[in-house]
Image (cartoon, rainbow, N blue to C red; front, top):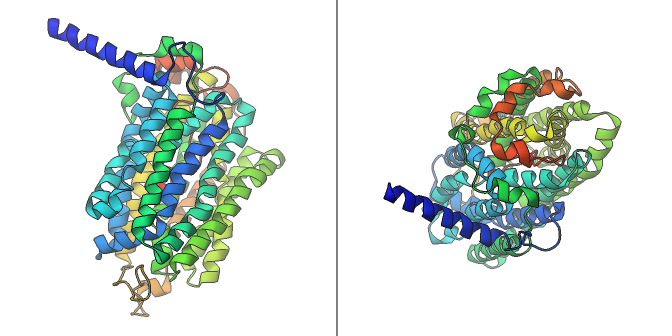
Length: 490
């Protein structure tokens, strides 16, 4: 008994110490100014800018480390990371409801960026740590919970689009800068610069980002118990069938995000392997796609939401995604990929629109429960999608040969003109197009606005203590505010 009391005292002291680190003695949140969407924007921009710099060096290191079955190993690495994120996301979300967003922003950014310096120190450890970092690599989830804390319902669609567009903006210039530094100097310089930017992001969170949870909730929620049910990643999936609208949305998300997650994990490698893009061309492609995505997720998304409605915006985005994937699958010429890239930018409006329709149809105190279901589905896709794409590439014998002497990256294996890859350059993309077509058919049955009917009382009993009293009309949204991309997408 004495030992247990000592353990409880040590635990209480640890909690109080952590509280003092994150919150000032007076109870006011640390940081510069009031919590705003712009704080979230800067955090996302710096994190993905650092990873964008590594686009060219990472393709080279990936091929050098796994010269055989490169696509398959790439899929397995990102698949393990995605599955670990799926398993850990509910626990991190529940803890962020209690301990606050800032501490978990710091934790997720640190572990997401931890593999960066290992790229030159030890490639094997680099890929191993990337896989294991999935336990904490859910920055987007915490970021969108942060945004939900500080925005009203009518503002969320615009805020989601802004943060999602920031991801695209971070990739407009960083791959080009990384490719230039890599070709003119060395990969080591690129890794050092990316590490420095990641450290800057961590310092920004420590110094400038204020806590977003309502100040009055902090003393009441701090140290609140977390049940195993809240940490169960399959709990949200088991609740999917309790409401028809939620079920339709979750099926739509699964069928459409499964190919998207696989595409993000292997697309840069695909451009180099099959389409024969140089490092500079890949960087230019990412920049143009990023600019178009920014326009789509800010200007176009707002216009469509106001003119044709939420549901029709989702259907339009899914239609663009089908066209994009089919074009990638059959496209064997560079101009086809460029044209498909423009369509891909328009397809990025889908998930902000899905998040908006879920947010509109859930009570403020149940945002986290319903959004948690969507996040659980997307986390599962982030594990299955990359592994599926890698396996399909492997089945169709799309492999890499040794690097060409004049190019720092891998050279495509197109020696046999009768090979399947000469007929269908991108087999996984065609599988993806079929999956999104099914998603579009399911989305046709989603009601435009269900009101209270989408919120069965069964969800309430699963809400945690923090959710039941910490969600103001702003709606903290728990952990699952993540309408566009996961961290594993780079």
